[in-house]
Length: 258
Length: 257
Image (cartoon, rainbow over all chains, first blue to last red; front, side, top):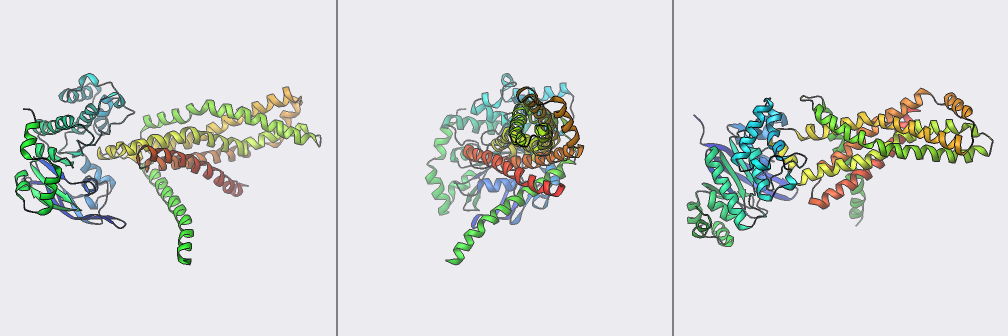
């Protein structure tokens, strides 16, 4: 029987000198749904994310992924855990020395010994699912921002991860492109049945894709629950955040074409 | 007041020691990951080709002129006590012991070292290194190990090339420009330059290769702050490598003599 929570973060504390970024974060990432961590600039989102994927070690506290505490693991042990993750970076983070095909093939080549035909088939199928089959031989420098992001998703999905993590997926995009990315996240979650974790400051994304939302504020999780829980909260910090984001639930829905 | 001043004075050597410590740690980490499978021969060959084959022209070009100018200069000196025949030996000793390893290391540092720092730095600031780590591929092993190995392996070869081409330059200048007898030139050279001079120089070249590639990779790998940060990392990589090569050369030579 699988646990309902895929990732559990317990009392996570991290400081850089006098800068106390995480002051005891407690939260869970539910299996099989789209989880959103929302927070303003400097709330500690990126630092939290780096702890979740084991790129940083906390001062104290634990990150438990699928039942295993990753904060006590060394680099070699972490590699096994990291294969469960697919990470989509803000600007795609495709390797610019490789074509799109090679980028998506990279994890396969590194971890599986597939025959060239099989490799090609799997990569082209993934590119096809994301509408990139015609761009397979192009380099990241020649792709549009949206294509690069989809390329990043393709590369993250190719190893069939348990969980797909998006770092600030809509930053730097115009509102229409941002809603396209939201749709990409929702469709990907649906089609590939993966757990998703979206880290964002974009309230519209949060409304658009979030099934479980956690608000990170000054290094602690202020509230965690459904969108409705968030909207109904009396907590002054939550109310202030919702008000200052300038988005109301009703308006967001109208932005999303069916 | 005194405390403030002494604090600031102490900051500089502390920062220096911290940097040396970090670079040493990365060097040990590279050695650790170099012996662990998987061995990436493809990456190593690509690095050898870029760092080695790609530097042949620039090393050859600087070599021929360096050999030539040392011949010219030593001819002026030796002429005053009628020892022009010593020019060949003088150039041979200078090249094999010092100029071959040091100059080829400096050329590789400014050409390939700067490129390594820029490439890794760009990968760092655009999240490509983090992306690689999240795909369960160790970035030190994938990116740094092949570059450091390749530079360490290929720099003695480039230094040897520098020696040969430099000797050729000196021979051309001596025999055709300065009218030194060819036989004297060669016999003095053979009499005075020992195999140990050559091997000592090539050993130094390997050490310089290791140091310059570690520094370049270190600066690039830990770059931060966008395009400006990458630029700074590249500048520092080249400056630190050049200084380290010359400083290490002194101490290594004093140990070997």
